[in-house]
Image (cartoon, rainbow, N blue to C red; front, top):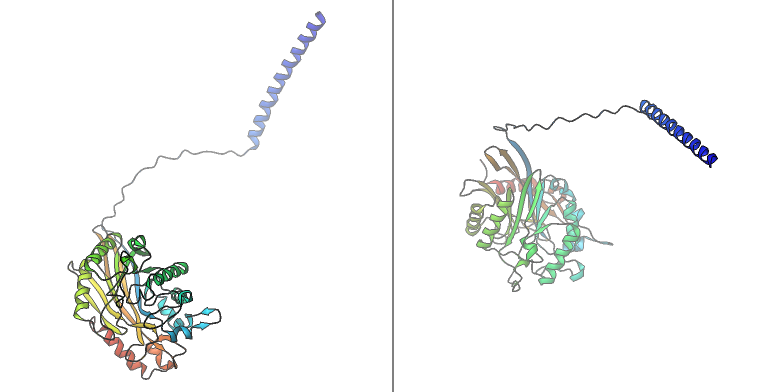
Length: 389
């Protein structure tokens, strides 16, 4: 028994000694490690001090250029000329003016014919349906949104509207004026550029006698002052600028009717800032209209045909209308102003209903138009006669 106790005591002594030795070694290793590692200093951040910045007297300004082109009216001679082995290609038809179309920050076009494609059968006057590739060409040329409320919106009934919208959505081409359902109609089309928000609205006088199906008013916006008033006010509340694309007036008449002028004044008084008119298929002048609240609004009564199969008597002359928009933010509030309206006349060149090309009117002599320079001067005088200072 004593031997066992001695062995036990001896063992405890050894264990205690080893424990002390381990502690010493651990302490030494720790300090050696501390000496080898880089010293990391952590600085305590000073508490954030709130500062009141005086912005009184300061203002901020943004500018954009808005543009619009007229009727994209695709007759059979036009889409037959665009036919290629893989389908249809309209890009060469507008390649001569593409650089001009790319200049505005936002560009609207009036898509007069539905883009139902070959799926529902291509057709021409009087019941149009066009290849979907028209939309591809417009996007390639810088078009940001198309108006699709016009007298041909229901040419292929409900199926035509739905197929056309589906094709535009697939292509990524925004549209306004003809919709697929109530929710689509209720959604404002607001495009933002450089911090300036622009609402686009679109309405038409009618649909060539084709009735809008009961319960499906969303298929096309028809001119109705109370409905327009409500949407204008809603758009005005949600954006900086309201643009109205409107199908109105008399075909082939080169000056606006009294009805157009009166409706333009109503729309401007309710809050519209820019009106781009369509339907006459010929150009009608630009004009400034003063709103009831003192704002200055721009009206382009008709942009004519931009690309179509129509010829002669000014039906093959269209153009690009532009206007500069300035947004100024100051302590007094936000102010929107319009200035420097511009117009680039264009001409649809063709040879025996082939080789359709949209070209600058001033250069149209090289594409077969006689006396192009004088025609250019005539059109510029016609379009700007009401806004000359």
